[in-house]
Image 1: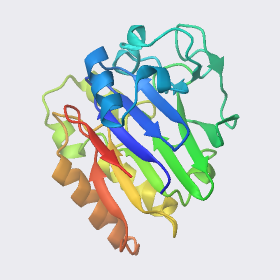
Image 2: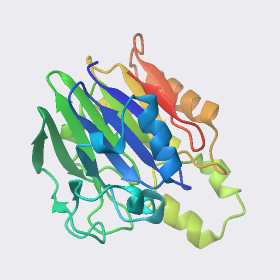
Image 3: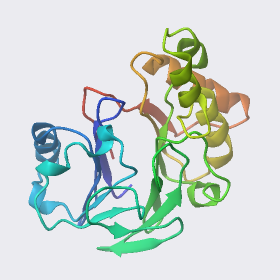
Length: 248
């Protein structure tokens, strides 16, 4: 693959991801501290001045609370009403091309206005970045199929959520059509999206209280095998809340 993806943080306490190509550097969401962003950039040999564009999925605090640490003049992209500051608006299906990388906005379903996922493509390499959605709309699925790399939400285990002691209203929100994907839902979608080009699947936005990394990976791996998928050559791992992880 021609890119490096670095997850600075992924989860309900904060989210930020760096996507680096040879000539381009993108930041997806900015819900972390200035220090965390600097450490992530440094690990790639980059600085904030090297960021070419910032893509926001939606306006929840764990995705935008660190915006004040970004330098002025950066190009921000998001849905029309998705973030409370000036940005270039994207609607589902819209494309932008930055330094040869085509970025396509696609629809998600979350309790935030104009929430989006993104598909990044350079040559034959395609990365689909899908988090914070209660389900994946049918019109989004064709954009994601046969991605080289999936960064996809696998937020909770249904039983762990059910017996978490959380208020029923919160459980219903998380499980709802504008909430978050469970491990099983993630598996079901991936079973129709993984293709011959797929090399890596990163499970994202795992709940600290209602999921477990090993469990999520096992559910997805075994579920895909049960669906008849050959996982030879496909790496399945998970992004973490408090630890940076990178993939190439």
